Image (cartoon, protein in one colour):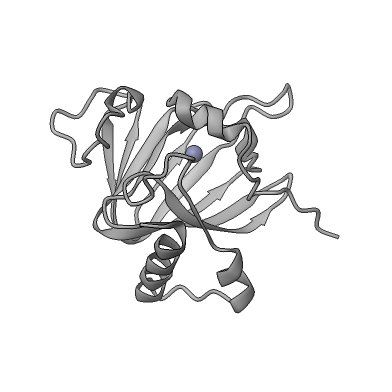
Length: 187
Ligand code: ZN
């Protein structure tokens, strides 16, 4: 599957979820494969609605069983402890993994060959209308259920370039990845 196809599939899921995007937003809506070339399994589709030094809102779409790989949002400086984020499931099912006692039989299937880069295994299941808030500096990863998922993300300022991924291959890609969450200034 190509990025273009992933984007088209994700737009279909948004439509099913009843979430309306303007034509400009549809153009900006992007599929991200974290440089691994395995978009069907590892990646996500997203739109940044707003990202300012004070807050950020995004829509995330996951195709069926698609996984956002494990990462954390580090402390930036003395005045910024790192991004805090709330995920609210709007449609479908999301299996979210955070630090804590490992869940004996998790619902997600971990992408082959990448098992060691999915280290937190405490499962939180989010269905439409359920949300979960991650403190800064907390490892997390998530996967959609069999129909895919739509997740609204509310957070403090997003600086993707600072995110730390567990998979070194993604960290390598990060260095040259395009910035999609450019911080806007509101006049
Ligand atoms: Zn995150």
